[in-house]
Amino acid sequence: MLLILLGVLILHVIILILLIVSTAASAWSVADNSGKDLWYKCSTNNGGYHCQPSSNEDWIQAVQALMILSVLFCFFSLIAFLYQLFRLVKGGRFFFTAIFQILASVFVMCGAIIYTVMRPDDGTHTNFGYAYVLAWVAFPMCLISGLIYIVLRKKE
Amino acid sequence: MLTFLALTSVALLGIVPEQSQAIAIYTGWERHALVGSDIRLSCSFFSWRWTSEDVTFSWTYRPDGSRDSISIFHYTGGAAYVDNKGPFRDRLEFVGNPGRRDGSILLKNLELNDNGTFTCDAKNPPDIVGRPSSVRLLVFEKVPIQAGVITGAIIGVVLGLLVLIVVIYYLMRFLVARRVFSLSVSKHGKKKKEGSQQRQIKV
Image 1 (cartoon, chains in turn yellow, blue):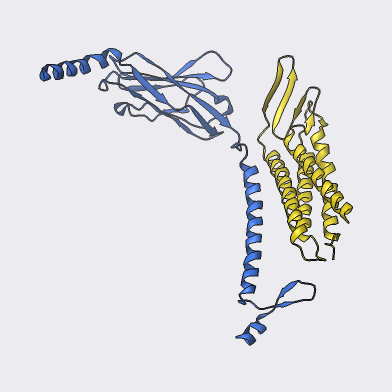
Image 2 (cartoon, rainbow over the protein chains, first blue to last red):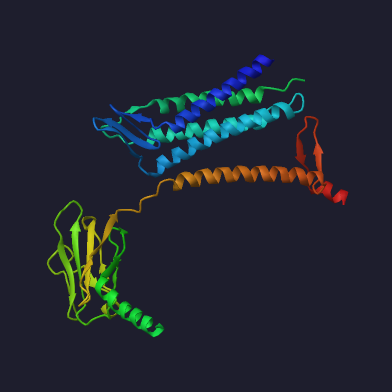
């Protein structure tokens, strides 16, 4: 039982770390020597490493908001899990934890979908960066973790 | 002794500003406008002298990316001369009041080519030493969204909804505990809200 608990907790922490890295790193699109989105457009040319703020279009702001919300909800669900671990009645299910975790996964999915669809098709910056991949990896992990919390019961 | 000091201070006050005075011209820093709209570029000045009858205002325009300025407006001798050959012919109007030190102009029907720097120079003889002031005009197709507005709005709305739901949940639990609403407790620990029948019976 303790092993399952530890495993679930480690999975949750890994998901939180993936979401934080995906949100904070400005590497959703990459080109030869530069990365951009969500926050900065940085490029390394012979003059050095220059960054300028990303474009202010509405869809980028929506993706920023959804990623931040997913990090927040994943964090809330971690707090709720720790709280419910000690305060739940015996045999109860971790509903609050599951709800927050599933909402977090929905937000990541929406953010990644909006980014995929609305990304402009210009010459540079045509490849997806590691932060984008991490967002897509975090989404199913988050969903599975939420479903585990629905199924999990506190030991009688 | 005191009267001597008073007289010297008054004399100094009269002399020193005259030597160090300069005309100070004020325009905006930057103006934003939409294509097709009108915009008023304001220009006023501060001078220690009274407004003279020979006060002059002149506006020059330098397009973005160009190094040449073109003169588009001049007011002198009580008459205003607007651009009749340049980029603003038939689109420029003088809306200022020189008697009140206001040399503002109105640009009508803006185009995207009107992006640039407008410089106002005012002279109030004999107070003619001063720096012209510039205002930058930015013309947009549509109003650009500032960074972070939509982000903040989405986050705020979702967190607000969350707080609202939590508050309503605890409010309902509180009201149930005070028996304002009557509930029935099912065997799995879930609470359902009954209809009004039970309330009437209880009352």
